[in-house]
Image (cartoon, rainbow, N blue to C red; front, side, top):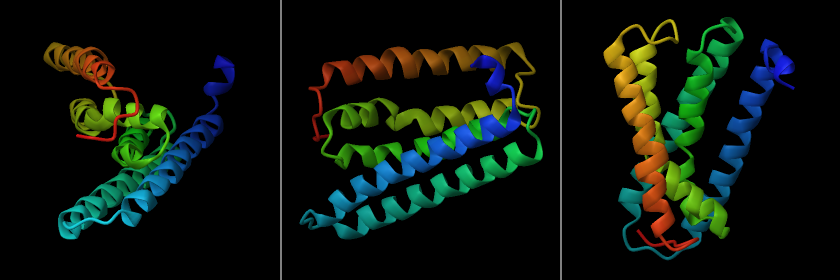
Length: 159
């Protein structure tokens, strides 16, 4: 299995599948959000357009980067950033597990963007300070944000 992941075509297909699946689930969440009766439609419209635009831009640019330079790690990271932009819409899906995952990964785009900036253009860390920031970012995402998610009731749709 790991041997197959070294093939650039397999990694590209996997990244494209992750991006497509995330977008499909986000569209379900956006459909649920659009069918609710809300008084404040303008702020939601701006947030939806900005997140969808950023997610598609990063995802498509990451797929292009993976196709053009398969050995560079920036492409898969950009696809992951693009996919994580759609995770906030999972909060509106009537599946408690996806709502919980949406709570957990809601701050992932900012963290992943910081990692991309620190590793650009080679896709690798070049300084010790960048590695320290990376470790702190992972601690935030996998310890603090996960702990916040675990104390939130499972599938809670409230902020």
